[in-house]
Length: 588
Image (cartoon, one colour):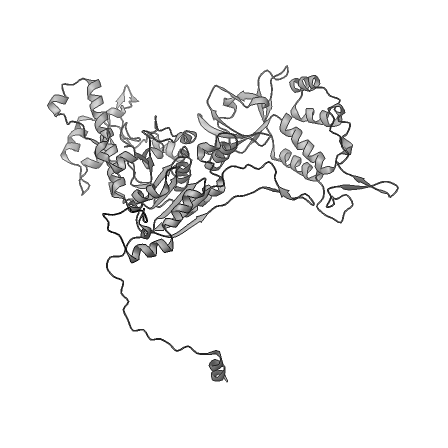
């Protein structure tokens, strides 16, 4: 993840009302945040994250909209002011709230008066400023000045308790302050934004605490350094996860974040210096100036890997090519089409979907678009997609069939457009065939499912593709499908299956839709974090908390069947149990 705001990147704006807004920082455009105003996007480019800005609207003194950085001292002073306005939590002070939520004030004569909101009347006439006056103040004054004038012109402000006065000030700041905080977009903030501001069913109402359980039980982690993108043959396959995601790509984004392939790498100064010309290298020159050789004239890294023999000596074909391209520029970046899509052998995510194309629209907020993928993004290599048809019956899929091979003598007579179309079809067939064959080989390190399909039918086809000890996690917004799945792997059903096992040709049967011995340590669990207001006499859950589906996850561990009968060897002696009375006699 970049440490500063980059062009065309998505950022999260936290507004004074505590709501979130995701915007794309496109250069030379205007960013609008509704009633809080708008500002040029160029004012954010290159700035670090976690800064708070005030929007300064253009007026007579300021000809254009500008942003003012709110210092940490100013934010800290406002926080201290809010804490000072809040009632004390000590029950021994007279000014503190009692269990009934009232306050006591000590007068000059020593008498004590009770103050509460019981007799407070919310009347709009107590505010001397009219709506027209407030609208005029918005054009001439800042949000802080408007709040001060509103509180001074309120005739019933002295009747409020300290707690209600603090809530009143917070409510006015959230309404009139033209302020926002820029935050980097991660999976947690994206989930909160979709869950609260957008359509929650789009992500199957998946909450953050349940997403944390999914990541924990699936044991997703970065297993080894990223494979060499251009010579991956020397990297052994490891860290492969199989995923079914119907949350618009949120599960895939969370797994990719844990693996370390979600964000684009930031080019540091050392990388930039490495790409600069080195005085020790020889470059072709024209009139005393270095000439840049086009990338199409350079040898790709894939050709270097294939043309280099095992002893490190270049082959004859490589030597002949290098002689025809003299003088030659060193290749700092791979040429076009040198990086094969979906070719990673480690730290990969294989996404299984039911439609023609996978629904991973939420990945666009992290710089990856499946329809127009960026070769520099890690997901271009580490995210593999295939459909159920390609997995279960690849012969029925037209993209799995090899295109007709055209001889070289005929291929040379074709024009450029027809030839490009031929090679494009060949590359697509090679990519699809490699992904399908790699998936059908199995040996995955884990399985994560978030789907509305029947989980038992999914596991019947996918459990054999997992290696021994691989974790299995199934998420469902409702508990009924997972209760049925838990019963299919219960101890009683597994005992009945092992006592009288049916033939493999008869599976699945009515009593055993799936082999119950394929998984152990199955559990069904849920979790919900509730926000509470903690105050003396006012401790209760927040009444504005979101409802919706509870959400449940099913977890288990894939096990392999042992071959042959289990035998115990060795000499075992049964020890006589010693009673407590005998132990006392021996000790005495």
